[in-house]
Length: 273
View 1: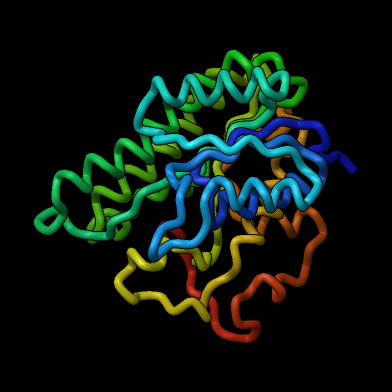
View 2: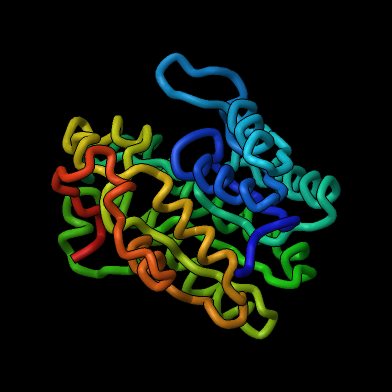
C-alpha cells in the first residue's frame, strides 16, 4: 500500500484539532511535516502549540518543522513555504486547514469578523496554494487538500450565516478552479469535509449548539486525508470528498471508534443535505 514515508506536508492550522491529527497520522508513515499556525505559545483557553504538535510528530516517527505563521500575511506564507522546501528538499502536499468561523447573520456580524473569515479561509488558501505550486510541480505525486465543503447552493446554507458560507465556499471554489488549471500538470486539488461535526476548539464558536458527545474525533478526518494523499494525483482531482465515503472506499466499514461517545447520535455537519 502507498504511504507518505519521506513525503513533505505543509499543514496550516496544525497546532490543534484536525490539522494536528493529520500531521500525526502522516508522521506514523515517516513523513516530514511543516507544522504551521499562529500558536507558538500556550493559550489560556485553547490546547496545543506548533511546538507541542511538532513533538508529537517526532514521537510518532516523523520529522517536524514548527513555523509560527499568520496565513493572512502572504510574505510570511512565502517564507514558510520556502523554508520548508529548503529543510526537506521539496513539498509534496499542501493541506489548507486553517479556518475562521462565526455563525452570525448579516445584521449581527461585525466587519472585522467578515474580514477575518475571508482573509483566513479564502485569501490564505489561495496564497498558500500559489506559494506552494512551484514546489508541488516538482513532486512525483503532488496534492493540495482544502478542508472545505461541497458546493451546495441550497439557500438554507446562506440564510443564517451568509459570510461564513461564502468564505468556506471560496475555499471550495479554489478546488473547482485549480483542479482544472493544474490537471495537465498532475497536481491533485481536492476538498475534504466531515459527514458529522468534529470535536475541535471550533465548537466553542457555535454558542453551545453542539454537544461534544454528538461528534466524532479529528482522527477520522486524519485517516481520510491520509487516504486521499496516498492516491495517484492524476487519478483523483477536482473532487468534493466526505470523510466517511473515503474511508468506506478503503474498506473501513465500522466507524464507531471515531465517535467521542460511541453509541450517541451524531450531528450532521453544515452544508450537507
